[in-house]
Amino acid sequence: TWGPSQPPSSDHPPPPAHGEAVAGNSPKQRCVFADPGVLRRDSNDEEGPRVISAAKPMRMCELCNLPQPRGTSHCGACEVCIEGFDHHCPWTGKCVGRKNVNAFYTFLVVGFTSLGYIFFVSVLRVQDR
Image (cartoon, rainbow, N blue to C red):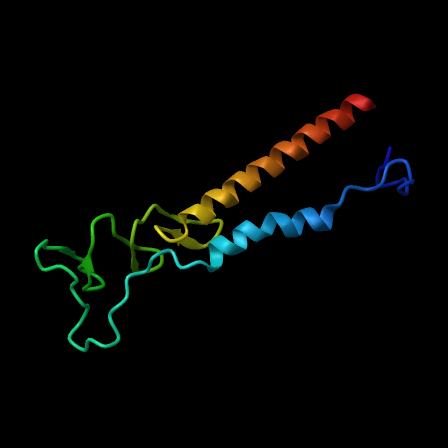
């Protein structure tokens, strides 16, 4: 067995903490640094945002003064409109929207899988004693 008072032996090496920590943060980093789908003004249009289709009237955001396509909402925490807005995540400090939702779900799966692995290994270690 290996514990804080005993040095690791060749029979039972210590768990690879650094590699798992780096691998576990990779999905979070992808989620944090991905654009969630922030609506922006067209830089070429000085009058405001470019409207793609005039056939369908779009709802206007009262705070951003941007047309909101279907599924777009304004995030009060970030003060921007997000396409496919799901929620504002306190763990990533960012909105989850159409463009980063897959990275967010990957972050959740990796996180809960790591948590399950740690729990399973802890139970096995307790039973060995």
